[in-house]
Image (spheres, rainbow, N blue to C red):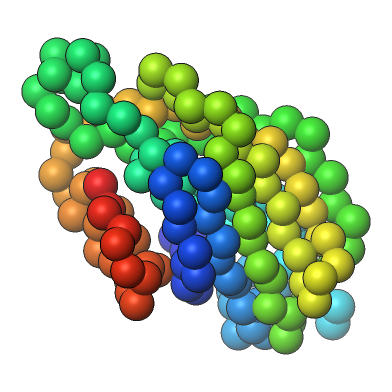
Length: 163
């Protein structure tokens, strides 16, 4: 099963931050078992939603380098490498509109680190630090699928150049 845990990107500032939204609905498959009669979005999927937005920010913030030239100008994709300091402060339940905010803390050659926070109605639900490896991916199918997803997420945003 594939989880796309972002509904819309509301703001995307390369090199700085991204803000997105995830609307949790009772029809999502994972809620049937987590927990029967008391549906709660699993914490790991809340972190994954932040990772999806963080990966987008890392990719649009990546700079062309000598390494890119050596790799034949292949597009670098963000691969989640580390999750640090994850904290859960509020349960997320069906009907919640989760705002996902990620801030680029460090961009290095081949890697990026973001701080992420998920809130519901202004109340923090989760926070974490995420580190991504930026790797050249030689498979066009990956790029095609990622571009289509990013175009869907960012529809209506002006001045955003997607990788």
